[in-house]
Amino acid sequence: MHITVEPRDDHAVLYLRGEFDTFYVPTLQQEISALAKTGMHRLVLDMRFVKFINSTALGAIIKASKEASKQGGRLVISRPSPFCRDILEKIGLDRAVSIFDKEEDAQAEVVRDTKVEAKRPEAADEAEASTVLFSPVDLSRLEHFLSQSKHIVKPPMSKDKPEVGWSGSGRMAALDANGVRFTWSGGNTGLSPFAMGQLLAMGTEWRVKFQMPMYKRGWCEAACVVRELDERADSVKVGAVFSKIDEATRNAIKQYANDMAFLKEELKKATDK
Image 1 (cartoon, rainbow, N blue to C red):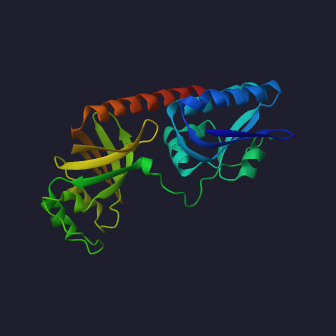
Image 2 (cartoon, one colour):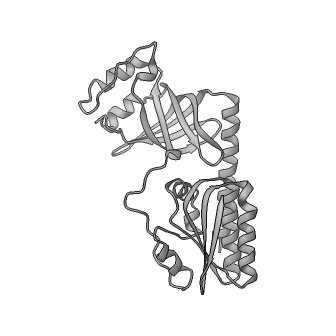
């Protein structure tokens, strides 16, 4: 990661570019410490070009924000990439550190007591990190339900080549070593929540693919069985337990869950009054 520091009259902007992981945490801390020695405690972290960030780096941002506040200053985040914004909001860091989509709003925030309202972009790209892709083990079940839909063009499927069949895309709600939870709105199938619930019925087995952005890059794969199903007005919420998963992936999930727990605890400390 590369950091460019631009001191202004009453604040400083730190432009971060690249992958912000554990290795670069000391670099950020050194830059912030150098600014603090000059009495500069009003900081803007511009994260527009940050492609990756892990739990240690997020913890460093929380710590830097707390230290700036102790000194009567403030730290805010400006223009986070879609990847970063998804993670920042997923762990709730935006409750402790204000996030802005315009650089001028972020800079105005750190130099006055009246906060500028942080706004989410109207059409932010949805990061792949929150996506769960799922496809059926039983292809005949899929044919039965999707044959009722007039809104989807289905590629040819066969038992010998299940990968050419349909797959759904859900929004991840939770992930641990035992299983995954996600919400599905039906995509382009045109299915009602009731029909979605019948398709993803309890006891059915599915192949899933998902990501853990702060720990392991790329897609992880596993098989799971639906154990919980909640029909909502326009979607279904699914809870599934892993029925087949390799040990390396399970260990990665455990580390990911530990990282998330650590960050949420640090965030709680930062927001407790």
